[in-house]
Image (cartoon, rainbow, N blue to C red; front, side, top):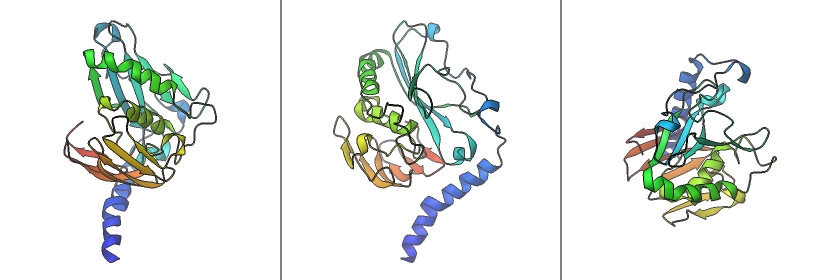
Length: 244
């Protein structure tokens, strides 16, 4: 029992405490009205990039939640298109929002980062499947959002990634809500059957497979190992190691 407690402290409590201490030292806007939601220039102008592209992006969320979680979204661009399309799941207005923000905008003043990018012919082939997965998301109604344990913004993006596994991405372990399985399922295989997920309403479970590696999920956070692209996955902190 003492060893189990030590493992729990090292893998869950200490990363969360460290991230919370760091976040407490960061200057943040007092509310959403004071936050910066403007474009950052992380992405090139859409008209300057002729190829098709899919971006999976994220940024720390607002308030003290930002110590523990990121908000993720999807960016698409058809070949030759002159603008990006951005899709977010939010808790206000129309739940799945299209182009409500610039594709690479700050989120609550927090700069975005790239989780995965697919380009060229591969992206062009996958974009229709991504659109279908977005349209088929079962929690797209106005009541289909719950900040914790889900379904929330990260539940939405994780659903699309499971339906279109060819994108080859898994949301970081601090994307709270990603382990909520659409429709309240307890078990799910990705569309290519190479990753499996067990989840009790996003509260605890595990994921294993080619993309997920081995992950244990607890209360919206995850700890694990990526074997394919070696990295540790730490609660609140995120992925530490080789990029996807």
